[in-house]
Image (cartoon, rainbow, N blue to C red):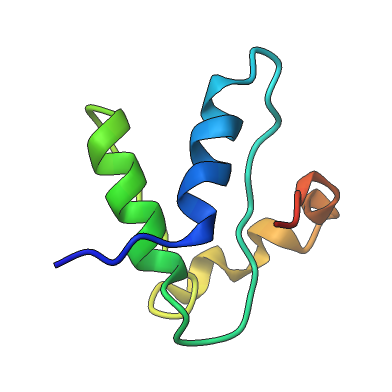
Amino acid sequence: MYFRRKVDSYLRQWKDKENRLPLIIKGARQIGKTESIVHFASENYENIVFINSVLEGQYKTILSDGYCHFFEGF
């Protein structure tokens, strides 16, 4: 069962933007970030790439080169 969250409407707005930037979701632990993103992606896209930098240590450096300036808070 999926519980709707405030971020759901934000994600739909982000997807509808014509010139949207990449989206990086940050927040406290255990609030449903992953569940919200996976739910959104499965409803809106045919293919999904999921990278968990905690479980896949080699991906931890993806954000180390300053890519965090793409962050759009909600």
